[in-house]
Image 1 (cartoon, rainbow, N blue to C red):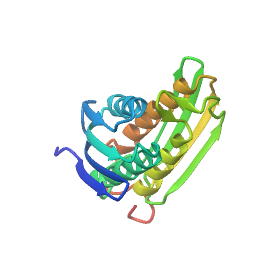
Image 2 (tube, rainbow, N blue to C red; image 1 turned 180 degrees about the vertical axis):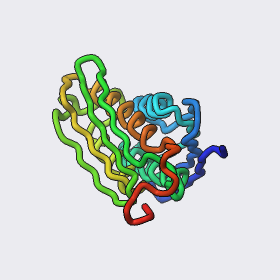
Image 3 (cartoon, rainbow, N blue to C red; image 1 turned 90 degrees about the vertical axis):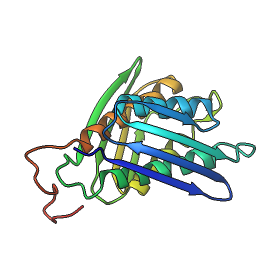
Image 4 (cartoon, one colour; image 1 turned 180 degrees about the horizontal axis):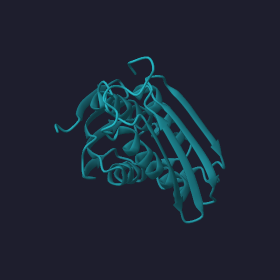
Length: 197
């Protein structure tokens, strides 16, 4: 089977981002965004979803991390959508519940071709984790969901440590996405009554 891959670039007056992404990978990554904690999260996403990713992002970090994180989300969403292609034979839906110490995260994904994002539950009690603004978690996943045209739902079921909650979200998303993108031999076309996604 040919590996499902995508190569996406995005350059604006605020950011310059390039990404190579492989759905059928083994968890290898080479990531540089200029934001240490965000690099750690993208590495966790790649490793736990068993995706492969090369990511280089240069942004206006002299302003803050907003544009870099948001635009990386846009690029990742585009890469997911491109790599998955016509979605024939995939499970389409994925879900996972992931514990990380005191934090418990639920994530559900539908690669339906319609963007929708929901994030509910305990919010972060710290404004920053390292050099990463915790407000950007919502911006990142919103951008991924709309760029990939997926339904993406999070429930933060418990947690007090912002690092644990955020890392749990990235890992949980990766596990749910891995499930949704997997091939299922019983699905011979697209899993939809419409015949396309």
